[in-house]
Image (cartoon, rainbow, N blue to C red; front, side, top):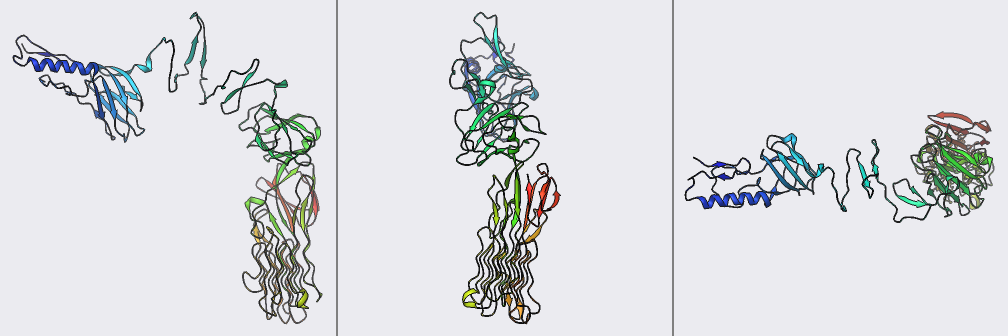
Length: 606
């Protein structure tokens, strides 16, 4: 009768009289196989992206007495190497148990299963160890399904993960009752970090909105007043009250992000200075009173409670100490302010400089290479005076340079006045030893006979051009470049703004060039005069702030021409626009914005 073999470890059961003379090797083989199965360890390199089948020496005629005859029959298996894809590692399709260590790298999944039963394997998390057993077709993870486990203490260096909205149950001393914690069935993942200490008696637990819990004293009416006086910008937390001191200057309070119905913030004017240094409210993507603009509190001594309603109206004033605080709410308003252009010089005159050019819209540049300015915050109910400067008048006199343009401005309570300076007058060819230089202004006037050109104002305009001969004159500076940049006697070009449609404004006037004429800069600059005075110089274009052309040197047209008048343009959200104006500005719309174009002086009540 022949020997038979066990079905799992393939250990030889000796038949009577079999294997004469070979019992030593066979017994050693059996002992080594049992030793590996009970306590054996093997490291298996599974690097790459292909599935791996563990080596299994299940020969029924094996006489090998070594201790390393295969991989399958080891109790502990460590997988190593860098994975290039998700892989399966297969063992024999027989019963057994293993301790597995996934020590691979590569951030891919390793699934351990029986040969022929890939769908019934278990994934072994990278960097962890698992105890598994198999019935020959399905692998079971013992640690994932322990059932009820009783322990005196539990220590973990990682997270304890209770799946399927299971509860963390804390039993009482009798075992009859318990307290439990359980996640909501539709929870969005978050972490709550407990306070570092127990807190004092009667305190409550609050959150900072980021999951950090702390103990705090309850306050009257539910408002948690903060003891630290606020003097610089901060982000408010729902349910808290703040004393805000703007005596050292205005600052911004950012309202809570992602608020819910009933969330509220209380703000108090600590030093009674909101009227001179308003407190700005950053809406943080939510409306304030239905407006999509930031607001300000500009009423002295006010205490305001802002309560969140919904995404349509957003934060609303529910109660305050002064009813007039609602008028203190403010909104953003962009502007373009251009002063009147300078007049051209008399008799061989230099071109007039463009009026000063200041712009806050859409990050567009201001004149003279200046950056875009900051939008105004207009206070509801406040009236703002709009001044539109005239251009410098014609210059018929042989004793003075061209006339300077008139300033344009926006002024009113609670804002810093925005003023653009009138353009400088062009130099004149008469009496060159005293008056032939160009005048200073928003942009400088052009020079005559090698005299100095006028200087522009920083962040408003460029210098005038320097004449290079004893008969010719330089062009006036523009908002976008200096005079003479494009050629002798040419006015500097202006700038284009899309605040009410892409339009060039702020061009310098051209200067006298003997038999020819300097060309006015783009943006309303007038042309210079040519000898013998025909054609004559031309004025700057109205409501562009363009400089006037310098006069011819001979003939009938020796008068320096007037600069163009300025313009003031306001642009704000249509939801903020009140429609109360004087001076008959042109009102237009672009998308969700309303645009007021003042071609003459007037006012706007916010």
